[in-house]
Length: 75
Image 1 (spheres, rainbow, N blue to C red):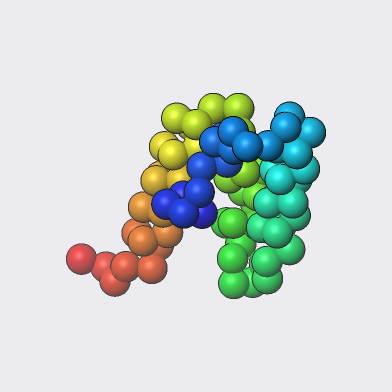
Image 2: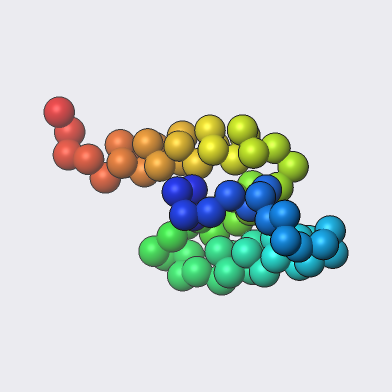
């Protein structure tokens, strides 16, 4: 999601359509299998928030790096 889309940039949609797009994105992430994607399920709302695009990217990058560190073998 971080690389493939920007939840804040949907100029072709009305405000109501953007809100519905955001709601559907939240539901899509929240319905992932929690045993496989616990962080994405927990972060469904912030990952789809459209109020602050800079926060969206910095949060996504931090989340990705934390995931890589969590599965990386000890150095």
